[in-house]
Length: 177
Image (cartoon, rainbow, N blue to C red):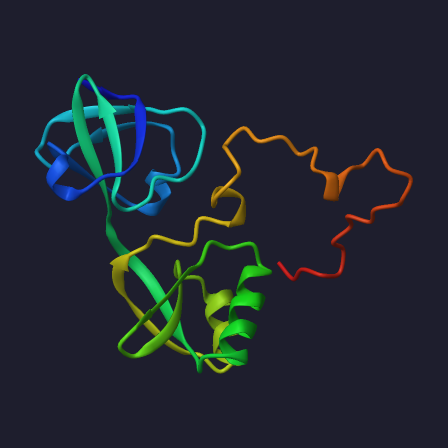
């Protein structure tokens, strides 16, 4: 069995010897038995870290494998750009769900896994929903973008708990779950 142990970051399709198509839920996992798209068995043995993104490379035993986001059931919500889109992203994000945000020839969209509560919320905010199958490659989150490593320290000057001012980190009443 091929052991994929190294994250390579984004790799060009022509530089990989094989591909590995995974759902979003499987791209979260660091330990997983998989079948490469060529049919060969492999195992993921990765350090805890960022979610595997569509186009990321993995290496093991001299083999470079490119990750492909699988087509899976999704809901795409569309509203007008500007404040309606910001409001939709805010309220869905406030539910602590993973969201894909994009734009195509039809305009901006927000994509999430099917969930009747989220769907009802999106409709109440004026979104038109489409249930379909598409790759789900959501936003990685601010902490995994530029400058923060997987093992980063939380001792930043702007969030120093040793100073003499109070912090209220309570979120009670702010989130509807």
